[in-house]
Image (cartoon, rainbow, N blue to C red; front, side):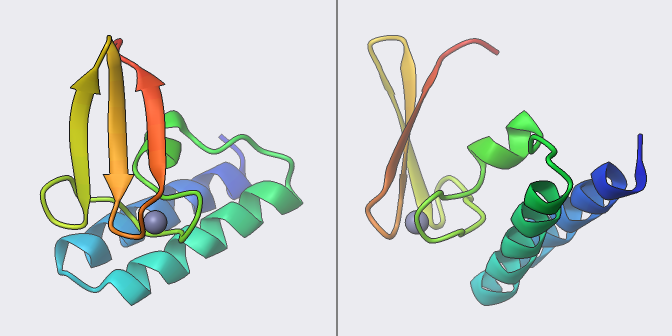
Length: 92
Ligand SMILES: [Zn+2]
């Protein structure tokens, strides 16, 4: 794993920890940093990162706290508090 990928992994951990503590602003800050590192290094963000972050407001999503999760026709639909929806095929 190269340094940029490691940094993204670390920022992901920090975002998750901040979100768990209820510090959404700090979580957003780490999410944005991780996105920037990925962009600059032309890396794809890990799938778990993409699934637990909001594309619109960069929040780190915690189902039951700042996000709702529903199953719909074999898809997982995550709705952020900002109103953005994300749909994924139900696999795992
Ligand atoms: Zn959002």
